[in-house]
Image (cartoon, rainbow, N blue to C red; front, side):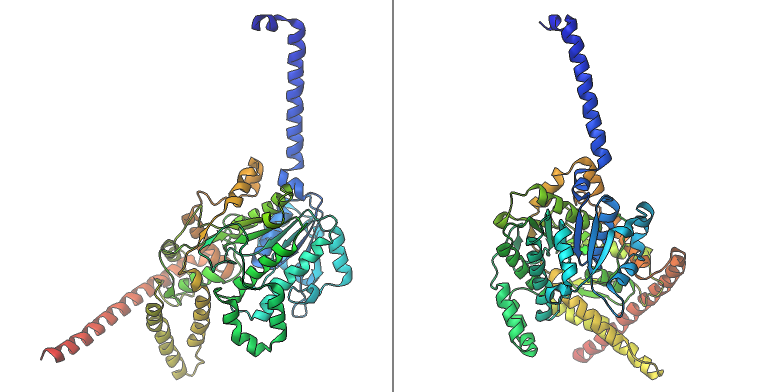
Length: 530
């Protein structure tokens, strides 16, 4: 039968031509699809996007990536508040002067025509939007990223409620009126439910509703509100995580019929690869501790060596965020209680302990030292609070007191003690996340990664599997040196020579302390032994 079929000229000829035509058509379709773009790029093609928090650390990278990788998008409306006499449009122009956007300017010369500054402020009623701007957004926008938030852990509850909860409620109501809405992503935090030890990609019950918190902060005098804030937030370590939790509850209760998802990033850190390796523009969280250690100021911190440093590079975070909006649209049948929630963390697929974080950063900190470091690099991680306070007194406060005393004696203004007050305040605010561990699940994030085609996985890379922390922290130290401290590579040799001198001073001081301490103990023992 096989032979008969193969020698039949009629069947054979038509079948072969048909197969060739089908193959050619398939190749044409594939080439056409690639020419148009990947599934994610096609999703963003022709779309109008509204972004809040676009001038923040995460927001800047999101803006850059969308403009560079989704060239066919229609327009991005960026909510920006006027500041210090500079209009929102003026601040947008200043924003694009950042080194972060250099690659974008080369690859997408007409990028500026696709961004419109919208004057507004998330801490104000109605976001401070004019009626015309509000209607423009509602009538044109199809994709929303609500990134804006006050990330100050010690923010007063009234302002944190207005900025983090009320603004989200306003944006949700706007989304309900958007006839073209395809996807709305609310950016929360992986630690919104940090009062629990296991955090899955689902909603949790909370003791308060937004309406109750709103009534509380708008009724009570500020002095009383500040006094009772610790009791109100309860098991949450700060007003930031507490208000993020309440916002999630609000979104669950009020988002019926809205195509939305909640994106929960862990501790966002400098870029891993793009558009600029190791780019960072702030001293928040771990970056501040590394910067303080590199400058010789921080020598001890309240942190557990075996606890997980749940860091995530900002460029990978943004890629996952962009992909999540596509995913929400693709899975339009999942709403309300089944709303898609994405825990974007490193602790599941690429866990890194704080002890490893310390070891690698010290290693590369010695290779890429700062020109102005005041002492040799060293850092002790102490989990026990009492032991930490004792060490901090001897390694931070007493040296600061000694330096300030000498400074006053030579007629200059003391500043070390005040600097350490700021440093210790910052470290106290983040210590909760350095001495505790949480068990996260990230099934939705991994499922999303597997659904991307090969090209999208290349363009919007966000999987943390097989991530190299050693390479990341090597780049991290160099980036901090150049982007935060504005130090050029040609100053590196001078910095290393200075560090070598500080090393011998450090060893001499340790030897002196050891000898003096030994002498002191010997004299005490002699008195008792006589």
